[in-house]
Length: 255
Image: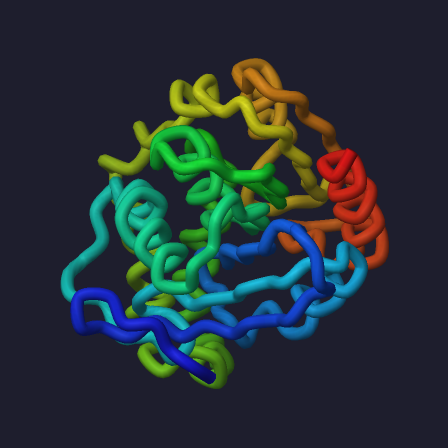
C-alpha cells in the first residue's frame, strides 16, 4: 500500500476510486485496534453504494504505519484529530470529507469536526465515545488480560507490524486512572454538520447514553440507527443495515 509522510514518518493508506462528479471523499477512521486492513472491503462497498471516492488509513502505531514515539496521553484522540488528520487531508488534497469513524475513530471524527476549523460534509459515527463509561473500562481490562494470556497478540500481529504499539498503546491509556475524566461532550456542542449515529444494543464497550449525549448537544441534524444482535462493530455484525443507513444519509446530504 502507498504511504503519506508526516514529519518524516510514514502513514499507510488505501484509496478507493469513486464516480466522476463533485462528491465528497469518504475518510474512514478506524477503532482502537483497527487498521487499513481490518476494515476489509467495507469501505469499498460503501464507496460503491454512495458513488464517492474513499480513503482508509492506519494511524501511527497501527497496520504498516510507523510506530509510536512515546506513550499515549489522555489527549491522544485530540492530537490525531487536530494535528495528524488535517495534515493527512492536506497531503491527499481532500476538502470537505465525509468522516466515517468507528469507536475511537468516531471520537476523532467528532473532535475534528468540532475544533479543527476545517469544513466537513458530515459524520457517520459508529459506536462513538464522548465520555468514559465503566462498561468500556471493564471490557478493555478483560481484553488486555486476554492479550497477555491467550493468542490474541499473535492474531493481531497479522494486521499490525508493531502489535504492542497498537494494543498496549490503546489499552493502557484507556485504563489509566487519569483517563476516567476524559470527555468531549462540550466539543460536540460546536458541531453543526449532519451526523448519523450507529450503535449495537449488545455493544460491550458502550451504551446508548453515548448517542443520547451527542444528540443532546449537537447543533446540526442527527439521525440514529440502533441495531439488535449487534455488538461494538456494527459494520461487521450488521453490514447490510449499516450500508443501507449510510446510503440514505448520503442521499440526504446530496439533497
